[in-house]
Length: 264
Ligand SMILES: Nc1nc(=O)c2c([nH]1)NC[C@@H]1CN(c3ccc(C(=O)N[C@@H](CCC(=O)O)C(=O)O)cc3)CN21
Ligand SMILES: CC(C)C(=O)C(=O)O
Ligand SMILES: [Mg+2]
Image (cartoon, rainbow, N blue to C red; front, side):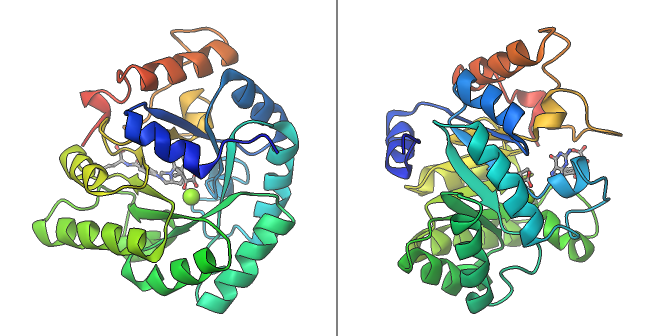
């Protein structure tokens, strides 16, 4: 196994080197991203929307995630492989352990990602103790879309911001190895990133995060309908898929992406 490790990622955070991550769902794109030098591949449950054509991520199952994770695993060699745990597959700690074990054993993922705050602390501790690294996910958590009422920025009020600060520290203490912050104000994301030892991956969370992730189809401009305002289509200024991916890597590494126009 020649893949990037969590230890190497933490070192990049310490050194202040920006980390790149893209979502990916199949072997051909995985090979392209891997060869371009993307550090983290995320098999996101956004596949429910961009691959399957649903309006939300809720219909996605563990079987779907395993199927796509296997493809991405086979297409790549160097990147760290993270897989999303789909809606309801981690509703209790026991269920989470069972689902996560399948995603590592059958899907060959290295890390599982779960959406949620304080309620997930016990689950994160259980998985971590059993040898399954966890990436936490706070802010806009799309699996809670019907409770949230829309895909909108989170953490704008002081009480929401405080909850996010506390949840981030609690999840790190429980053993989370990484944290995704989605759609939160840039200054809050900067503060949380500084307060944690683990690498923070931002999407719509400003440029101060240790890493940046985008949905692959958004950065290639092939998402049907409206693309989120924090994302950027890199294809028009580059002209080919591979140069668009290289431009994304360069823009993240040099701190040029995300710019103020991509930040709340
Ligand atoms: N194609 C795609 N890109 C994504 O980034 C993405 C998915 N799908 N599916 C899963 C979630 C859902 N996400 C989304 C989807 C839409 C917005 C969006 O349209 N937000 C508006 C309003 C923000 C506000 O002002 O509160 C925006 O303009 O960005 C944000 C996140 C992020 N993830
Ligand atoms: C947008 C990223 C963070 C994600 O969770 C997904 O693609 O499902
Ligand atoms: Mg997801």
